[in-house]
Image (cartoon, rainbow, N blue to C red; front, side, top):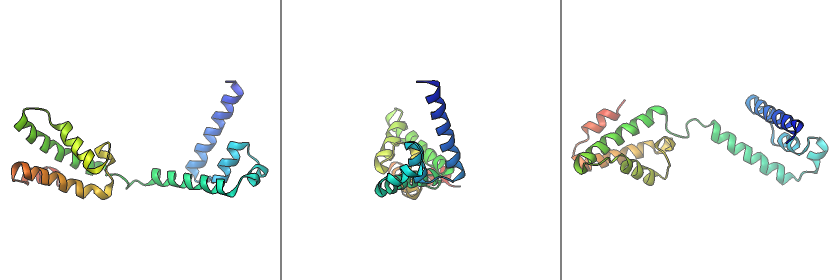
Length: 150
């Protein structure tokens, strides 16, 4: 790769980052920039390409900008504490480390790959699931309720 192409790519990435951060970017600008950049090029692009590209950018911006999409740090901590209580109770009975099993069941139940990736809308359902599990183990919710309440 030549120094000119490296410089061009770096300049392009910096420009894209600045434009994204300042919210001054449009899908047609991205297309023109990536294809060599003139209005003549833009006018030759099919409208469906511009629209599809714009929709993809909008979806990405929504996903990245939506801070309420996943559980908050506080909610994640409550989940972790509830999981810990259940895993320790199961561990007393089996004399094994049960953390992986409890996390795994939560992941399967809510179709996630990590407890911090639980959708915020499903937090109460997850806590209810964990509380029910703890109740079935001990016939008592006082410990899990005390450790996970705010």
